[in-house]
Length: 119
Image: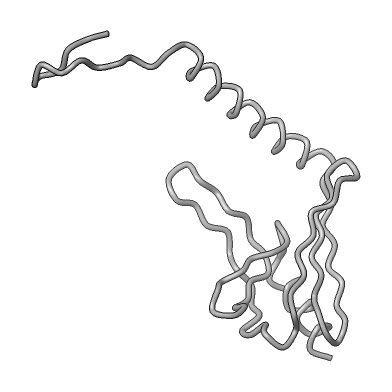
């Protein structure tokens, strides 16, 4: 324990909180590494909805979007803000919210997906 400039006692972070933070960081890095090795993305279009599925080691994470609420489909270029990096992808507006799906798409691939979805 220490004392700050105002005479109040300060608690120092415990070893457990540092270990917890390191553990969470390690899990995040492991997830990213596994995704780069074996992650897959799937898009399925029907007249009623768009289903986006990410598969990592056979475990799916699915999002379903109603086609009538999707507007302004477009290519989203990669973005870097400080140390944070977001890869390129397919973007669209969905009920007032901006959504980006699919990693590492080129503009040509995005245009082909949009053309197929509009048909």
